[in-house]
Length: 184
Image (cartoon, rainbow, N blue to C red; front, top):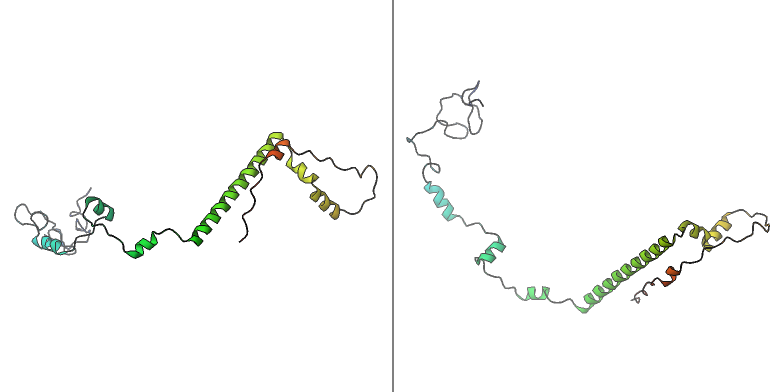
């Protein structure tokens, strides 16, 4: 890498500001020493202690440490809360408890309903029942189809009822959902 002092225009090694000449002892922009002082000059904070910096450090308030670390090392006293903190840690009142219980029961009911649907679906899949055929054979689907169709002449061959598949025995034994919670 080329020396920054010997280029087309001399620059400061510290702040890269252009220098008027290459033989300056300090940078006019940042004040950094550009020439080495071998034993001749002392630089505060680098070669000697800076008494002003030491005094400033003593007069400033110390930075607070991490609260957890201060608590563990014993530097921070344990704060004891007053009556307001005791109220915030008290158990909830009866109305809140009742609402919490109601929400808990609704969630449990929803879980049981989902489990019931999953069990019924598994049983249908195990027996290989075609759900599309069941939907076409349902009374509601045939009533909708009959209402939307134009009246056609009745013949004995056209009036034959469609066969409906028998319900699976496992579906009858599947658990039913619990009753809904009482209304408020």
